[in-house]
Amino acid sequence: MIKIILDTNVVVSALIQRSFPFLIVNEIFSNDKTELCLSDELFIEYFNVLKRKKFEKYPEFVANAQSLLLDLYNRAVLYHPTIHLHVITDTGDNKLLELAVTCKANFLITGNTNDFTIKEYEGTKIISPRAYWETYIR
Image 1: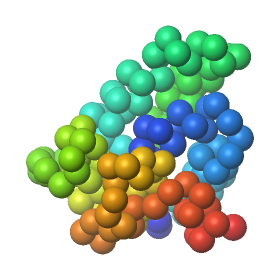
Image 2: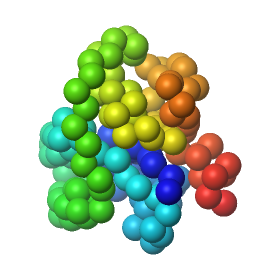
Image 3: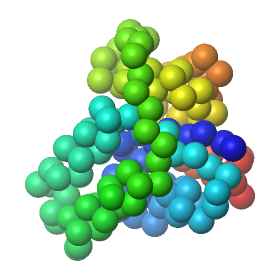
């Protein structure tokens, strides 16, 4: 079983364009070999970001976002990190590493190369959607 974490920017991108994030999200739902790891804190961030007004300009975004959130929540395995890390400068992103350590994720998939300058943390590979798709899926 491959355990992955999707950064919020990957979920947003999957809803806006049919690129690597979209393909990865579809792959999660089409096989039983991938475990999507989620925490309450990360799910709340998904929810809060996806309800921003700026996304209303995309056709059917709100309905698609609500549907995807429900599907992700139902498909994911929920973890409850109890550790608190201070590794990433953007302190809000540390929750992703806390989840990664807790669930022993194989991959943290993110488009945020500004804050995630490390390639690995405690055994979790930090990788872009494109690199993940081209290296591990295709």
